[in-house]
Image (tube, rainbow, N blue to C red):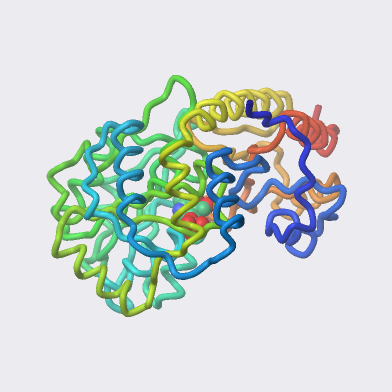
Length: 389
Ligand SMILES: Cc1ncc(COP(=O)(O)O)c(C=O)c1O
């Protein structure tokens, strides 16, 4: 029995979400509600905790050995949940997907060359590109009918030839937009024509809201299998981001070798805890995930209703994941004013402008918490802007 309503005290357990909230957002750790970093407040699937318990009971924690059983579990998950025939040899592990982005940048581009992102997007894309001395080529997303849209023609017109890689966040963080097969094919097409390596970061692709379905880029555009890198992980899906373990799936053997070389040069090896926990999740996490999705969907509805009741605020309807993109521009207030109102009621969402210039007057709300806590947060939000009602 999975009880997502269980009250857990996650403070003082070395969680960034709870323990950095005061320093980063000026919101007290004991009474504040952290709604920023993308992990959930819930316990991991029982099978994952059992795998960890087994390790603890054995008590010896040496280097991790053969990964065939992990690969088998990964292949099984992709076949079962995504009808995607992944081959075991396609997989290369990294220390989380942020690490994978860095390895790819170093394998497929040179300093001062550019990486394309669709902005606003997961802020670490930009941070990692810049930290590797590459340039960010931001292609602005358009908001139409409350959804993000790509403008591939404008992107193509802006290309200079220096762009070697494209980071696609699919489904999209923030806002939870699921890209259609047609949109994905357009991205694939521009990458093929302009000799760009597409990286489809699908870390959120298991968290699909009821009534929606996600298209895997590799499946809808098999013609780019020679250049495509897909990123997957158990970290978001099963709330085990602390394992810092992710997978690059690369069908093309030459490309895989090129990337494996950089991975080797960086001395990246498999983390024992991450591999065994991820394997357990892929093998036995289905029931937990199937129970989680309707729970998150209820939170999506709570968020939508709460935002609709506050004049001047709007939210993108989440088609996937739990990272709501709330637009405050209709209030007529500036960023500082919005932030100080949120801080005053102890709310700490992620600041929109860290996702790109387009997010200046937006905030990203992580709603992966107990219903009761989200209701409390939404009540505080209404109070913070009660003068508008
Ligand atoms: C799109 C995307 N990619 C990667 C990550 C981070 O992955 P990891 O923790 O494995 O580095 C996140 C975390 O929020 C994310 O949203």
